[in-house]
Image (cartoon, rainbow, N blue to C red; front, side):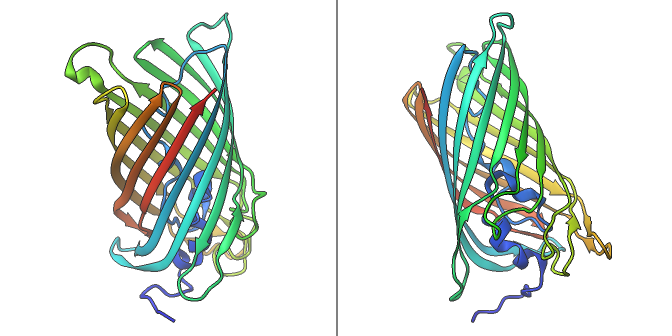
Length: 307
């Protein structure tokens, strides 16, 4: 079997099957981060939310991650666990508003990760449902060109035992979208942003730090930005930049330190509008820097259908 500079006892490798699997939005609470920040699935026009009496949205996201490279604690690239993750995220949302609040909208959402991880060598794959997430948001559109809001995501630890975070995780998040209107070339730009944190309960899993104890992981914080340019009514290229960090934590009994981590990912792709209510986005992300984490090397797909 292949060997790597990272020992199988290293936290990056130990968590690769759980964290590199993505558990979609909930991966940040693991002892050592592993590729794909929580809001890497946010793409172009994600937060360009309409004010409507009632609307339903189905979103299917999917990404493929190759974990053959990692960053050690000195921020140097080393060989990673060499696992491949295939992660789907099915999302069902309902948007609504009230006549008494004409510039305010709301939505609730259910998100379900579907995960398949292919380890290196002859190890068996790990397949199943990740921890589901529940989301509620309120947002305001003071002008037709600007949206700002607050959403709160909650990850519930009831997914497949191998893929679960084994902790409740809350993501308080500020969201915004800006897109000017006009006939000039610069009016075709748009910007979606996400700023937030991940706050985790105690991880009830004695393998979380590899020493047979539950653990308290550090809080996560992240900033995401997606800038697009609407070339035509159906085609919009965009670039994405995401920074995520996590503070240090410790095990529950012996208070062994669990080192924090960070990563910065950059990439880009394109959005294709089939109709005003149906579109597809494709993009690629890769880490430009990090420490104590698996390097992000992922292709993302997202299909949106409003009905």
